[in-house]
Length: 312
Length: 312
Image (cartoon, rainbow over all chains, first blue to last red; front, side, top):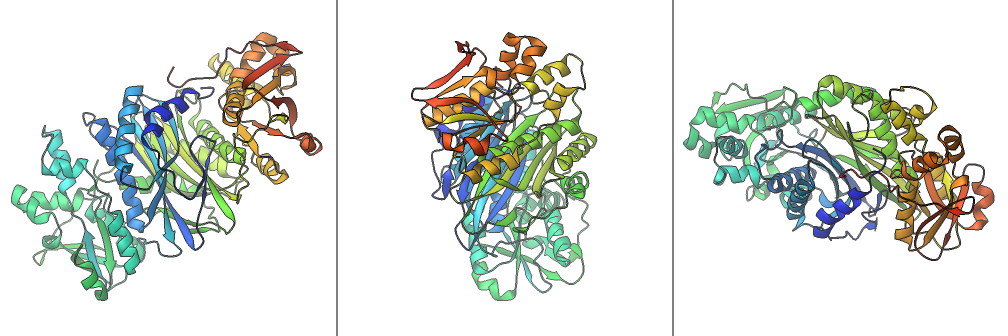
């Protein structure tokens, strides 16, 4: 309540030991009241904060190391959606014990392992719940960041990655399955950083990551861009596979309502098709109007699955 | 677990409604996957993350609005210590209920009321505990940020603000006093932003904010700068007053060990004295050696109070 001495030792032990990368633009790193960073000329900084809490963002019986790794990758997905290059992370750790903090440290380190991203600061506190607050910052060439309000009528709608697999994997975990393709889709989130950067380089302007569910995130684009998104369910990666596993009704529930696959949903004019097809799937188009409209082989699909509400 | 739709509504309602300031360097504000910011030429960005948790950073019976206001001001104090000009904040909110989130929103808004600081992003989640993760960013002219590793033997040690009053106020609160000068010192933290900027402009290079306790934070400077800090307890603002109230033994415990007054502790060569005296108090000097050495009217003071340990 009056100071916080040991947090430095703890962060030092559990986190800094494993994360030694120093970004070339850092002027003052971890360990002072704040970190200081230079931003290159003609560049901008994209920043996002996510909170992940045990029991809400992962099941209580989920390994903490995997949960922390997943939480960092989910946070990085926000940078992927902007097309930004990850540079720095600031970490807030709430832990029930030093051992829990240590496990989360391992997971965070695993997520950063192959990235040139620096742990630039952090704060650790003992609490009655395990949780991570993850702030990530990435660099963008001036004016090039992708956003959700840039979709235009006539553009194609694309998905890079698949939808629904992670939500089904989470359901499987809750029913006792602790391995397999779907559990892995939930556990081993891959932030599509290179794909996001590629989209930005190509000139794509409108992109979002699918964290709330395909329907909800398509709705975010539709609302922000004041356009309608028409999606063809049979073309959405993940739908056929889940359909064979679960039947099409149940599959559509996971594909449209289940978030947390961290695919990139974006729009682009038809001139982009050749460049995009190698790593993305065209799943619909933007039209004048509003809202999200889903069909399955030409038949309208009723959309009752609006995604998960933390306060429900 | 699979998406987070309503958090947008909630942040919108409880936070954005009250915080409308948009910073001139923001290129994309709150509401997308990340916010985007331009940094002016010849400037750098200082960033810090703090976590504040009910029951650890404020008593469970403390009004949430005051707790949130205090938490934001404490986070801003990190920018003050660097000499940075506040620009953006990203907020992670863990709340037991919408009402708790709303109260925290009021407190955050009050803290930002008189600042040109933008709420650039946030994440809200229901949890079993009320907590805030506060990331603040401020601008600094290139290379001018104050740091804890820049103290040099021969320099004076200064304090801007006082020490010990907040810790005594917290103690009073716990004993049932819910008003008065000391409780107010704990509740109404004032981040010394203008003073920090003034120190930076004057050319002060070494500064820290007193959040862990005067002794612990002086120790951070001593360790980082590889110098010894010698402090004269009788000169520390707050000591005489608390001494009259509590006796000198008890007063020294609060002044040296009690953190959270958010005074600025800094060092400067003797040429600065005239400029610093109007708003700071000279409390000691840096000498060759290591550690922190405290005297009271020439007598050595034993320092057993190392500040609060979150994991104790």
